[in-house]
Image: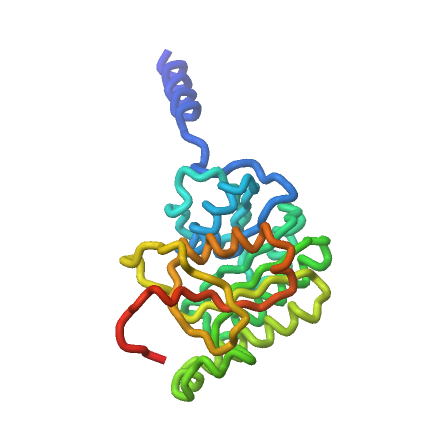
Length: 244
C-alpha cells in the first residue's frame, strides 16, 4: 500500500512539472539571433515577432532568458566561439536571416567578434542563409573619422576585431547588412522613433535599444538595405558633454 501511494505521488509530481518557459519548437526559415537574450537582442526579438517572423535564439547554457519571458521564441545552446556549435545551430534552425547582436563582455580582448562572426558567416554560407546582419561599431574601418585619437586607442583591439569580421562577411558572397552603433543610450532614455540609419561615416550619436531594433525591422523590409554598411544614430538625444 505504501509503495502504491509513493508511486501515485511521484506521478503527480512528474505531471505537474512545467515545461521549460518560452521553449517553443524550432521552426525553419525564420531568424536565428545570436545574443537574442541580451538587452538589445530581446528588443530585436520583439520586433521580429511583431513582423510575424519565427525567432530562434542562440545562447550559452548559462544565459539568463528573463528578458524573453512570455515571448514565443525557441532556443539552441552553444558557444559562438565554437564553429561546430554555430554550424549545428544553423542546421537545426535553417534560418533565412542570421543576426549577430552579441556583446563580447569580458571576452572583448580575445578576438571575440572576429571568431564569432566568421563562424556565423561560414555557417550561413554553407546553409544558404539569405541575409546576415552584423551589429558592429562606429570607429571601425572608414568610420574611424567619427572618433578621437584617444577613443581609437582605447578601443583599438575590439575595433580591429570587428573590422576583420566585417571584411570577411563582405567578401563571403552572403547578402549582408552591417549596422554600426556608437553610443547606446542608457535605459532611462525612452525611444524617440526618430533614430535613423546613415552612410555618413562621420556620424556619432546615441540610439536607444528599442529604436535600434525598429531600424533593423524597417531595413529587413527594404531590399535597398542589402549589402550596405550603416551607422545608427539619433541626434535628438542629448546625453551630456561628448565623451569621444
